[in-house]
Length: 78
Image: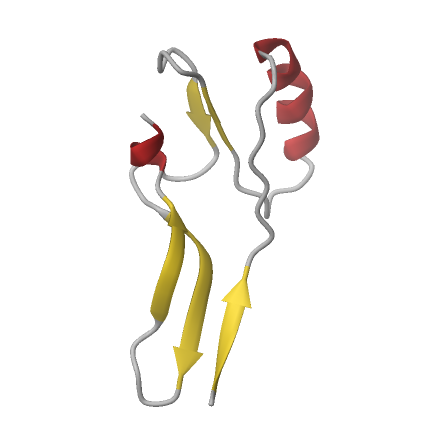
């Protein structure tokens, strides 16, 4: 007796040389959140609040608080 919502989510590895092209394409999709990061932390760029997790799935049920079982937490990447 409720609804479960899920955002499309894609995570992948690529070379640093691809970041400018990705950045250019992603600017044309303002509803898409992105986070570029490398192992050393030298690259850490996002178009959203880098201190807040992003909900990927969540549930809404009558008379209950929002259930948020899946989040992407930028802090955990570092």
